[in-house]
Length: 253
Image (tube, rainbow, N blue to C red; front, side, top):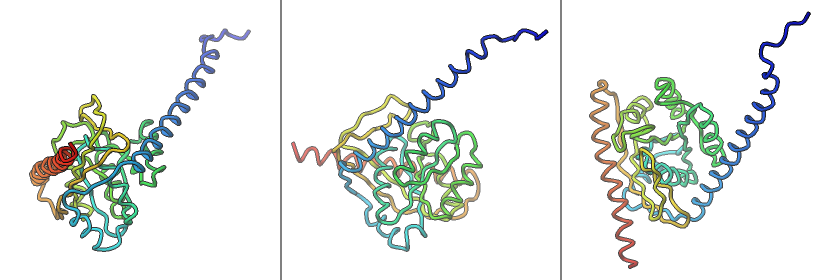
């Protein structure tokens, strides 16, 4: 005699799970397509204006082939989109831009967006697998990738510079390049970083800091001291970029 199935509803639940997975894949694909197209729209319609430090960026890129001399660009998480669009624009000058992207399901979605814009997805999580993420970032820099870093990422506190970018610049030997970026028109998210999403046809004002060659670190305290100083400088660069935008708006009034 065949014993009864202890879970008679299991067979009925399987089609439901398949439908949910299919639904999730469709939503992810649509979201990836939509975000990729929105970034394309921003790249086509936003005007980028370097208001400070353009000569410093020119000097770094002129020192050799950009893919042979990468940098470690670093911005605040609030300007994630604006700074990413600016760095993407440097691809035409030979810079190979990369982003650290979580190996989670959400990360797979963001990886697709990065590849759609011919940028390198470096898989890892600074909050969950810090050592492995740092190793992946260091290897990427040595392969010629310039990974975009965010001083207060991935979870804040906002505008408190952490030593991750300092350690990466020290280990890889690539100069650290601070990027302050603001948009003339944006939507501000209700997130820990108050992230600014630029609107189409806006102006992106960018202030670049002098490239920093970190060298050998004497320990965690040394890295934190440098991170604090870099955070102060990044605040000033964002102030310069925002001030340029305010002056431009006043002149049109």
